[in-house]
Length: 213
Image (cartoon, rainbow, N blue to C red; front, side):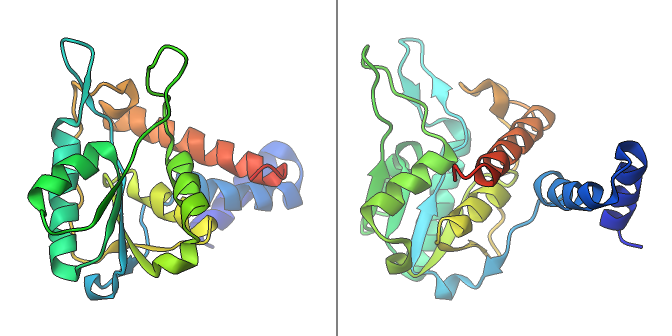
């Protein structure tokens, strides 16, 4: 009996409904127990997508990339150097990449601004939807995703759901050390982030089941 079967049996005993228990067990397995992403050989990557993970708040209130995004930028620059692929990345990653890989084609993704001129939080899903509105995903070819290690599975899964042929680049160890001074509280510790990620996965799953995504 597989782990999912064990979970389905436990839920069936709790819920008294074997059919719903099996469906719920499959969702729980996919959205709370799966923390790896499919990989692709770097030589096959045709477009690089770089996702941020937190930031740092400066004393004057400005946002700076911070150490995690700088580490992500170094990986993006390395992958761009290895593949020659163009880069599409959130600005906290894109700006350091433009310095590290001067010859690379880098397209930054910036958040919108609210009525006070403050940046509006741009989710992983929002980033991918913005890219898809500007360029049909199929045109980007094989997409290599660079993201924080615990963020990577959701980045790749969400990208694939929107039609991107997305993978983690094989042989690239993504950053995994959390920044306790991150400007985003949910990015400061692993347990807090995993709970945040699971909540988003389940929220997106519910929206899809309701016909909203």
